[in-house]
Every structure is written in C-alpha cells, then in structure tokens.
Image (tube, rainbow, N blue to C red):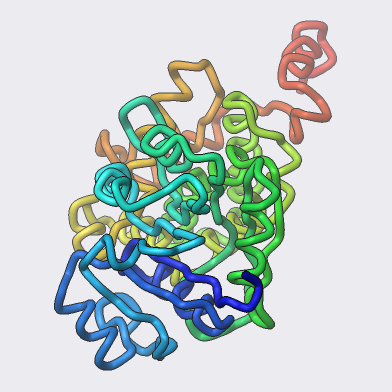
Amino acid sequence: MSDQPMRVAVLGGGSFGTALASIAADNGAEVRQWLRDPELAAQINREHRNGRYLPDYAINPAVVASTAMDEVLEGAGLVLVSIPSKAFREVVRQARPFLDERQILVSTTKGIQEEGFKLMSELLEEETGFPHIGVISGPNLASEVAQKQLTATVIASDDAETRTRVQTALGCEYFRVYASNDRFGVELGGALKNIYAIAAGMAAALGMGENTRSMLMTRALAEMSRFAVNQGANPMTFLGLAGVGDLIVTCSSALSRNYRVGQALGEGRTLEEAVEALGQVAEGVNTVRLVRDKAREDGVYMPLAEGLYQVLFAGVPAREMARLLMQGEQSSDVEFVLPRADVRQDRRDGGGAA
C-alpha cells in the first residue's frame, strides 16, 4: 500500500482549497478537486489556473478538476472540505453517498454554522458519523501559500491517524504542518480571529497607531481564549499557530478579506458596500453576530465582539465604538493568571482605587 500514491479529494474551488490541492499534487498525491462551476473546472484542467480566486498562481498540472462528486471522491483516502460555512452542510450531504468510514475527512473552513452554533468538524461528525475527522487552521493567507512562501498550519484531531496522514499529504519544504489534539480550540481560533481582523482593518482606516494595534490584538486574544475555554477548548492552544499566529497575520495584512471589510467600514462605507467591494465571502461578518449572541447567552465578557456588532449591525460609527471601548472595564491582563473576579474583589476591598 505504501507504494501507491495517496489519493486526495478537495471539495471546493476557492483560493485555499486550490492551494492545498496543488500542494498535495506537488507531494505526489493523485488529486481531484470538486467545483460547482463547470467553466472554472474546465479552466483549471485546461490552463492549470483558477482565474476567479488565484489568477496568478500556476496549479500543479496533476490536479484534475470536476463537477462530478462521485468521480472526485472515488478511492480518496483524504478528503479536504474547503466550502464556505453557509454551504458546508449542504455539500457534505451531497458527498455522503460517495464517502466511507475509512476515509479521513478534514475541514479547512474557518466559520460557524448559525443553527445550533456548530463548528464545521461537528457538521462532519453529524452528517457522516466517521471516526477520522480533523480540522486545518493557522496563519495561512491563500495567496502566499500559492506563491510557496514559507507557511505553517495546524492539523487538529483526536485521531492520531488523521494527524499523521495530513502531515504526510501536505507537509513540504514550504508548508509545515504541526499537530494538535485540541480540535475545538484550533477550530474556534480560526473562526474567532476573523472578528478581530475586521476591528484591525477599521483601526487602520481610522489612522490609529502601532500601540493601538498591539492593544487590539492582545485584548482580542484574551477574548478569543475566554470564549473558547467556555466552549471547552484548552487555553494553551491560543499560544500556537491557530491562536496568536492566525490572529497576527489576519490583523496585520490587507490580504485578509476580513481586514479589508474593516478598512472599508473605517472609511465610512456601509456593511453592504464593504462586502460588495470585496467580492468574496468574509466569514468574520457573520461570525461577529453569532459569537456576540452566544457570548450574551453564556455570560462571556466580550466587549470587542459587542462593539463590532454595534458597528456592523446597529449603525454605530467606527470611531464612536473605539471611544466606548476605552471607557470599558479595566480588569486583569491574563485572566488565567489573575481572574477577573479577583480584580473586582480587590476594588471592592479598596485595593483597586485609582
């Protein structure tokens, strides 16, 4: 079996799925990529180029694109699901008749389903019941991955076989794949950081400086880990690539779609104008609403997410949101070291007086 090349299926024709398909082919795998659009599939097969999402990137010619789900999934040992969160369950259901439990299913999508507040790996479990399920997340701007710039990612799964097979399929001289067993933590990191990329883009458009950006990212990391721990994740996960690593890149780069949405909002455009100008899915917009509502429901303190919700959905100007955030509670820095409740108690006892 080791003499046979791995067969990899990629569901989705977006930028990251396309980049991963090419990496797997570079590593010698037989790669099939499923797309809805027959014209885009034909272009990939004819020109070895994805003109819609990665027009300047040469795809490995061994990648074969198709609109036939059964052909793409036949014999695949590894299935990478790179579908936007809104259509994720629908596509997995479409794929289900052609899947079997020996296959490894890995989500690369950084988003949350609104109904039931479900992560993508949970949808894979619900729709298939398979044992080999994982997620890929990290500081992975697709255009830079496509350019073969040095990049690292995380494969997270409770299943050792899933972790090892993904490292074998995708690890190469320019794309490092690290392992984690905290699937929810890694997946939440990838989804939550999109929120704060919007805030970082807004701050840049408003002319705020490096001190502000540093404060924004570190308080974002505190919010992300606070929320994720409430959902059952390990706070240490957020010290790694899927936490602080992904947060840094998405809050620092205009290549980030969510950052560009925030920039447009900071320049005074409406949410509709910002999304229209982007021309692609920015997962963070929907994630802001979902996470803000879930945080309220669970009693998790998330002032940045609340402030962004007010800008995106309640018409509060971005500059006003920044002013209100600076008037919020001054609590502990790292609450896993000094709990917020202890700081409140110190104030009540007179130790926190200004």
